[in-house]
Length: 168
Image (cartoon, rainbow, N blue to C red):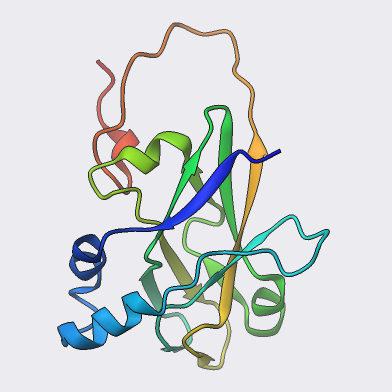
């Protein structure tokens, strides 16, 4: 049973989200061309590994927001949860800035095209060096259920953090 599909965001979106990280447009376009869609490592893997679009050196206590160049179309009733790869968390104390990333199904249609941007932190004592193409986080799809509540009619408009908007 398939409930989701990964895609690249548009080149225009990718360049916009990379503008503060990469000065050279040609370099950013080359990174875009090399984006790998998430995939599972083994037949029984629950997590889809995401790959770094560029190399990073992350000093102790430093943070970085990584635009992945990826978005995900999902069926309603599912969520994509992002976690650091366990090897990076255990060996280097790398974590996600928000502990667990939550990608809702309606994020795909957001103004930012649903571009998955991952914030990571180095909680260790040594610089973490990761190469372009290294696996750094994994996403797991889960079904979710609703509690009895008033009818929700709000629709997502914005991207990152947009569900903080006042309820109408």
